[in-house]
Length: 218
Image 1: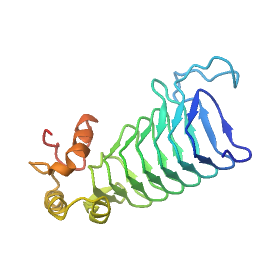
Image 2: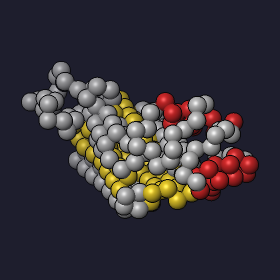
Image 3: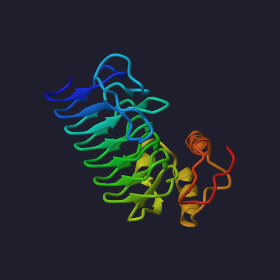
């Protein structure tokens, strides 16, 4: 469903079961001064488009820009509340919640199952690891590791998202290992097996300014 006064520009792929609220703007050109701004709203366009996964809800007045070299992507089963902004080339995983007025800068990577509180802002090219929670009003200037809690301005690490991990079926031993490591602002030397995929994604993303010391090889 696409609500009244919403604008969707191509190339754009919207999967089944999505809800796009009134006044949303999806697919306008990337905000990069060297990129062209199309003179027409149809025909051959100069940018990489937008992809939205199935069953995602995008509430009223939200904006998603096209990518400059890859499609800007919002995954499946996401929940974007009103006035959310996803800038060019962003990659938002599955089951992500971006609360009201969250702003993601260009090229931001957000892992699966992340929850970002209202009015948080994320600096361009930052990485937010799977299963993390970012507190409302936070300014994210460093990369956030998987399954963590971070808040403040600038955002700082405040332990593990133990509730989220438990709800996702992560065992108590793995939660305790990660909690002990984050208390020392580091990644565990040996990653628990059930967290390996999340940390592999984190390492592959090559976080440039992590809140914790560099991840171990996984």
